[in-house]
Structures are given as structure tokens and as C-alpha cells.
Length: 336
Ligand SMILES: NC(=O)c1ccc[n+]([C@@H]2O[C@H](COP(=O)([O-])OP(=O)(O)OC[C@H]3O[C@@H](n4cnc5c(N)ncnc54)[C@H](O)[C@@H]3O)[C@@H](O)[C@H]2O)c1
Image 1 (cartoon, rainbow, N blue to C red):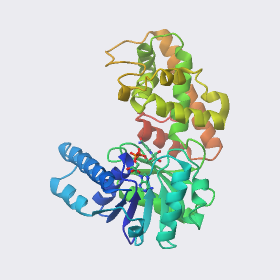
Image 2 (image 1 turned 90 degrees about the vertical axis):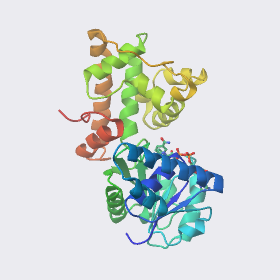
Image 3 (image 1 turned 120 degrees about the vertical axis):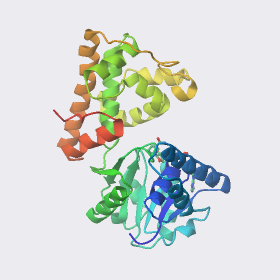
Image 4 (image 1 turned 180 degrees about the vertical axis):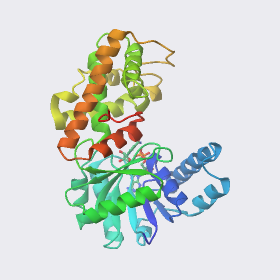
């Protein structure tokens, strides 16, 4: 790739995508709306880099050199020389279309343009980046400095060359790209939310801590659905679940479990509590819950993974890789 990497939006995701790009020796142009947002983004990138240094994954001088490759600016016009631009502004269709339209007007006609959207339609976003053949989803996982998975999502117009170049870019950052054909939820959220919903429904009146322990005892997931929802935030879970229920119907109906917690302001760890209000001690799942909740959780994940494969959204191998790396499972839902 000749030319710098542009990142629009220096928030949680954009700042760290800038960091990992600069660590891979790309020059980076990082754009946000004002100097305060840029300063926050650079601080965030530096802090993520410092964590990598503390863990022995990075030398101090390499972090300094990488940060030196990041040019922060409030002018979208500074993206002109970029070979690839990754949009990472807030998850709103109108805002993303406006920003992407302006990006398309600034970069050269052969520059690749990507979005880090978690769930908006790649095809609808690509419509403002003519030709849509050069537009692609590059779905990094949070935090991008740690998570190895990148879903490379092809919209209707995305060319094979663009998808291949985007995957090569992700691989060059030390990430593992998986090839995904666009569908609501992509791969990881579709499988994971399906399993979580099944887990909540099967739990019923049982103790959430015991239910989580049952899921961990029954298969490859490192945590149960209640702890996971507390971690990602009940509001985030609920908004993704609603999108999936609209697209796929009842199999994403959790009987109102998530909505009730959101209505009560119990959003998870970030609000001081969700299903749990503090650390959950060691508990041993009773065999009855392992059979009921554990089995429901993994059967739902397997069923959704089979549907993804049958629909041609991703290969069986990539579905397993995506769930292993995106959700931390020790094995994929289609393995074994
Ligand atoms: N946070 C996550 O866990 C996560 C994971 C995967 C994907 N995503 C997706 O990544 C995208 C960004 O999410 P985030 O969590 O980093 O959001 P964020 O709110 O932390 O950051 C967004 C940044 O975009 C900036 N911005 C807003 N309007 C802009 C404009 N017109 N031009 C330039 N910059 C502008 C904001 O000032 C802010 O700094 C969203 O599409 C989100 O769905 C988020």
C-alpha cells in the first residue's frame, strides 16, 4: 500500500486503530472534530501502547516512533494522500454517510475506504463512496490493540480485490482477518447474541451466577451470558439484540430480560451493576443447569453458525476462527 492510512474519529476504536497502524509502520492521518477530541484520542492511543510496553509486547522506543508517525488534524482535506481511510465515527447512519461522502470527495479514486461499523449496512454506506467497489467493512474488536480478530465485510458492491487488500492490511497489523459477506450482525455478534439469548431464556428463575458457571462447565466459552452482558453493557447488548430480532425474528427474543435491566438503569459494570453488583465468587454449577443452560447455550451458537455457513456468509473455518478470537472461546461452535 502506498500512501498513509487515514482514520476518521479518534475515539475508543479510532485511536487504537491509529496506534496499531502506526506500529505496523504506516504513516497515519488521524481526524476528529476538534483539538480536544484529538488530544483525548492521542492520550488513549499512548495509554494503550504503554499497556503493551508493560506486558512486554512492545519496546518503549517503538511506541515513541509509532506515535511520531501519527499526524492529528481537524481537516478532512488532509486525508488526500491516503491509500486507505478507516471511518470510526459514532454508530449513526446519517453521520457516517455524511462523513464518508466527504472522505470520498477528498481521496483519490483508487483509495480504499472502510468503515468500522458494528452493525450498519455496508451496502447502504458504500452508496456514498463511488465506486462502491472500493468500499468495505473493517470490523475491529474492542480494544483493537489487544483483540486479534478483524471481520472483513463485503457489501453488495465490494470488489474481491478490495476485500483482499483490506484483509492484507489487517494481516499486516498482526490481526487475523476473516472474510464475511454482509448480513445483520456479521458473524461474531450473530453467534454470540444468539447464544446469550438462549442462555437467558433457559436460565429462567435460576441463579445467574450458577447459570454462568454451567455455561463455562459445559463448553468452550470463558464466561457465561450474564457476566458477558455486564461486561459489554446491557444497553449495547439490547441495541444489538433489537437489530438482530428485527432481522431474524424470535430466535433473538430474550423475553424482555435485557430490556428490564436497561429500564432499571442497570447497564452493567459501567453503571455499577447489571445482573451482578460485584465480583462473583467461585461457584459450582449443579448438573441440572449444566444440562439445561449449558446445552441450550451451545446448541443455539451451533445452530446460528450452521445458518451462517449455509447462507454463505463465511466459511466454516472462518466462523470458528471469528468466534474463537472475537469471543475468546477455546474452540469454535462448529468444531468437534
Ligand atoms: N466501542 C466498541 O466496543 C466498538 C467495537 C467495534 C466497533 N465499534 C464501532 O466503531 C465506531 C466508533 O465507535 P467508538 O466506540 O470508537 O466511538 P467513540 O464515541 O469513542 O468515538 C467516536 C469519535 O468520532 C468523533 N467524531 C464524531 N463526529 C465526527 C466527524 N464528523 N468527523 C470526525 N470525527 C468525528 C468523535 O469526536 C469521537 O472522538 C462505531 O461505528 C462503533 O459502532 C465500536
